[in-house]
Length: 188
Image 1: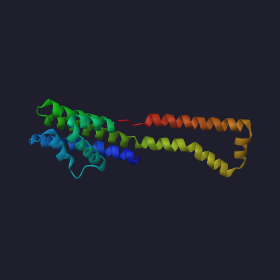
Image 2: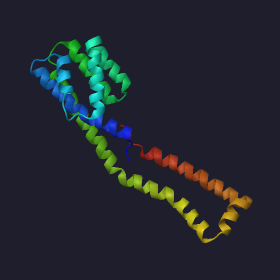
Image 3: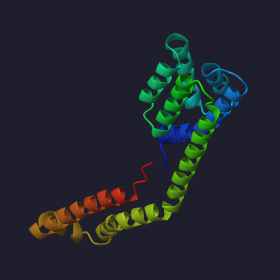
Image 4: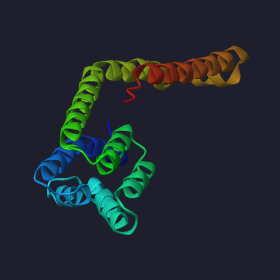
């Protein structure tokens, strides 16, 4: 399940291909890179986080130019997709040639990457749920044992073997949780 920050990151990454295509369209229509970015940033369907980022970028563009402005954006939001977009926009300014095809190619690549990561997350949902069930089983079993027989708690806490079993179980449970987390991590 995504947190608020994770959801915003995903929304920004998902919207970057559309932003690049809009910038490319403006460049094809004859706008310069800063004007193309300004026009594309005005789209109403952009996520709030991306609109806020682009507003900061556009303020910096007026003061510092497009290259430094997108460079600062890439440092503020350290995502590979943002770094790629910032670099592409910087090259669009410096190259002076037709940048629209390159921006459209990057948009297609970013869209494909985002789609693949979403598919991996969907396909691994069953494995993540299984990890939760398998990880919770010993804890639930212990809880039921404690509810059914009060002698279990006394044995686990008062005897040396009980404490050893309890500590070993807790350590193995922690190790299993770390191991499952490592196995199921879906880094992009």
